[in-house]
Image (cartoon, rainbow over all chains, first blue to last red; front, top):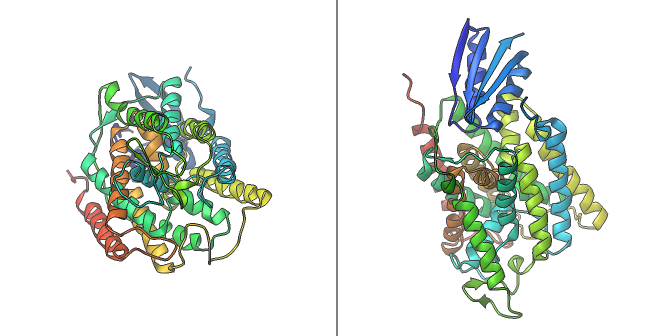
Length: 72
Length: 363
């Protein structure tokens, strides 16, 4: 199952917290996280990797980033 | 193919920490005050003094380091297409947090950057401050876990993001237009210190050059002294922490080499030995920085990237410095100011109020 997390416009550490909460809920094996700064993109990707999830795609368009992570 | 940011790697953040640590110690060697090669809170306080927002005669100088931090970040953000003008995440709350972050810092006599540099210079009192910082940030993480949230920013005009960088440019123009006149505490609209920390500074171009470099590197690497501790407490992540550790080690080694390391509690430069209030001042500052999402340096770097809310926090800190010195809240080497203790208690109450009341609505 795939879920979405919209963390656009939120500042540190909210995007990471939201992504980790979604990972911990354990209902999805693929999560799409929307953020709007490069720093948030890096932080979320790093946090996901530390939870043994894999960053499968980072798509940037119009200053927004869609990070796709998948359970390894 | 997206550009990979090498500064966002472990070695990127460590490199940034090393750069800051070495050059902060050298800035002290070249004229900045003791264990204050860089102190974001102290330097914003000196700017407030130079502008006459407070009239503490020993802390008045337009510190070029603050100007360089914002400008270096702005240049980096534009070069790497990361300039994102944005604002609107509870700016007034961020202003209030900035005011109390400054008051807490001035009760301790330093922001997290200076706490690290004081430790690297052998000042034992810094341990109390760092311990307080950890406790303050830990309280902040509890609020984050309970859903504390100041809301989302909105994209805005590019020029709106320029407001703080332009203010900094204005400060630089004032500094050049009204340079210090030997033996006088006033030059044009600016105040200068004739003695004390405000009278001690490295040459303008050296300070500006180094701080532009730091602003650039810190924008790329997202260096943050508060985030270093927060991420470890909240996520057990050591990424930012390795940058802070690198800063301390680099400053320590540089201090040893240039003969600036003096171990002890008594007689440390611009420091007092009231342990409880060194601790409590930084509990307040740590909590305020945590609730605002960044240490005072990071707020400057974010401002350079176009974050208007971070800019409001910076303004809060500068105004907070005015309150701190006009109301006798700031400490001095003799100890806490006459109203410093009640100010810390009020500040903690305000931060707790903000933390408890500003949560996401559970829908």
